[in-house]
Image (cartoon, rainbow, N blue to C red; front, side, top):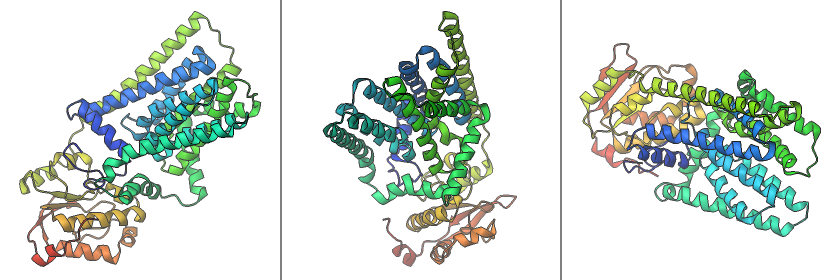
Length: 476
């Protein structure tokens, strides 16, 4: 984007547009350095915990809010390996939405806040589609509050205001993309690909994913306390005559909604539980406020404050260690980068096929011959390989890049190399159309270099047939 490329049309990644915008903003903060993105993600985390602290203070008091934040930091460290994650960038929006919900519980439903909730829903969806669990809880709360009076007119006004907010934020976010790309490209990258990428079939596999995520987050015991607090809410069924009781009941429901949303996403990644942190903190606050008679003396408050500082220090130091380790990592396959630079000039396009580390692709310093600049997303099964391989081959037929770099031992069917597929199942990924396109393309390339193990081959363009060029498909 910083070089004038358009997301999805010129460069493809299976991320919603907000991720492109946030990373672009972070790079801009540090004159193009990735450190700007890292700082932006740290600020997002800090704002999230600060807002969460004040939100929980309003329903359980400072003591239990501080204690729940300590548990929240521990859960954060468990599920967030490093902060440059889509889920982390959702956290501030989620916390603001929760604060607005609590304000509605205290002062009554507001059309203006409903509009703000709609804007936040759009921001959350176009950052991570299954991050809108808090919006479902908000809709439930508004329905309960307006129907108890009853006030159907207010319900309709809030619904329309929320919908208007969603439309406004969605329009602002996707307009720059749709101006140059198509809705189908945007929707495929944002939603359809990630559903196919999960590869889950049937309710049983989604339930297994949910079980795995609960088991993963339970390794430090934090989620056990959170689930116990939510279970206590459901068992006690507190009277909904106070903001505190209403808030805790809604957050118990919210944790269930977030768990189901994470299970729908499906991949067995601990980071999918990042959006559980705030409802888990609320559950923990309810549990301890009902079961543990903690004194509100100055000593107790001081010890909890010290504990939160220690927890914050460990989270910060652990994340900085991860960042330093990544930044100092030696360049993998430096011989491949050296040969690419020898065989091409800075303006030549180079396409990578196979499981190449991202640093190899970036440090080669060459523009890609396809919007699928990294073929790793193709490797997650037939349902992701076929549509992305088709896009990549169409782009290659149009651009005919100077070099095609193929890794022969990757989890992809071969492109030009004669090596058999690395796994028998990959042979079923191919279609007659894809094989024909590969065969036509291969006639324009010849091997120029092969590494000593024979795992990487660089193919160089040797000719451009006039009849072939005239038959190049246009990009749709």
